[in-house]
Figure 1: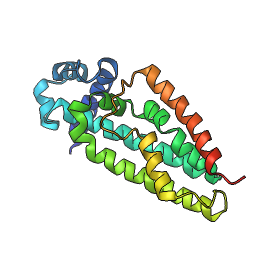
Figure 2: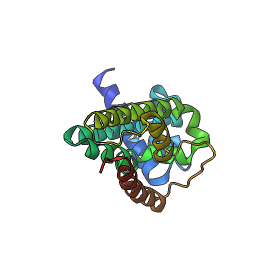
Figure 3: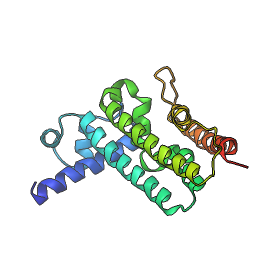
Amino acid sequence: MAEETLEKKAAILSAALEIFNHFGYEKTSMNDIAAKAGVGKGSIYYYFESKEDIYIELMNAQLKDAMHHLEQLIENETEIIGKIRLLMGHVVEILNQKAPLFLQALNNSSIFLKRIKDFIKNGIEEYKCTLRNLMIAGKEQGLFRDDIDINNSIDALTRWFMLIDENIVIDLNPETIQRIIEDDKHLVELILWGIVKR
């Protein structure tokens, strides 16, 4: 794409992000985005097929940034227990800070579920793989009890911390998100108390 074309697309994305953050997906229109970006509505359709496509592109960029941030935190932590604490106890907090559009999408799951289903599935698999590797390393270092079944533990932890159950419906308002962040930190400590050798 030519530089002018890239600048126009960036202006559309920047305007859309501001409007989505302020009004949410449902209350944002393509006209709002066009007006904020200073482009014609038709110009938006040159770059994006729909409002949903704009949202998904912005959400994916935020998620990539959030996951990179979490990976850096884990990489910089030297202790296995600290790495697990970060992985299990800070995911919602980091998503809240770095990927608010993803949390909004979960609130609008009827609109976005089909589009984000693969991303969620892949993210869960990466999360489980990272957690499994950390728990194996912890067992090899003699940090965890010998009777802990790593695979069953990972499945149970993933279901809880990722709230993976289609029957669970949560209103992810700021108060609920803050409560989840605090609850996750407390639960991590309880879990670690149960699996760490004493």
